[in-house]
Image (cartoon, rainbow, N blue to C red; front, side, top):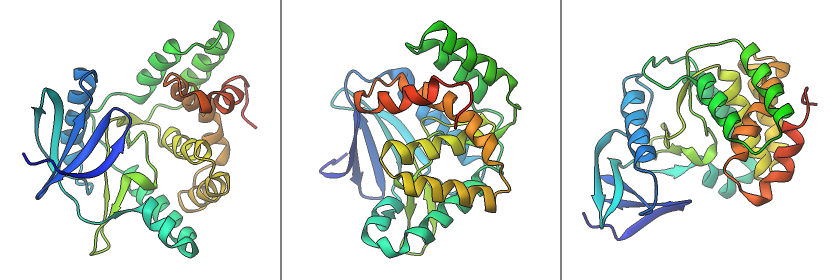
Length: 249
């Protein structure tokens, strides 16, 4: 491998291009289990027919775990939104329609979302009463088996020169209730400070996806709790506000 062109730098990983492939190189202390889980998720998602980069191999590079996958030429939707601010509404609608399509797929091999959320709630530093309320709410949610991305946002959508949309970064993929995935996307916009985009996104999802806003809002404290275990200091105040209420308002 000749990894001399950096595509992206993210927490604990750097993504390079090597010809027709990308190499996601993880930090040396990154969990082997997490790397192999991400690679396996991508392999599973390929079977659904969704447009995703194809997994090529899992290897090591200079002693670091590395995932090799197909290179998708183009620009991320987040970059296009920055370059074309007058087209933000258009891109948001495309994002929503793409997510609706994603939520029509099923992949029984993926981890169950509800089980994963129960585990994450246990791992939080929230008080026992709040954890109890969150677990009770989670147990009352309808169990479904649709593909959920877990971090669906403009930066994880690549638009090719032929105007095709590919979805990348499947490390958090599960099968479960799509309303949880919508709540997660809404949360991502808010954590980035894009509150106006968050509201536009949610309205579009409710209108185009025949989704009840209340169903998404019931998931917000749960996805906020799952996000809190990452321990990102600047996020904690907002996340605490959402996890400390019985009903999100």
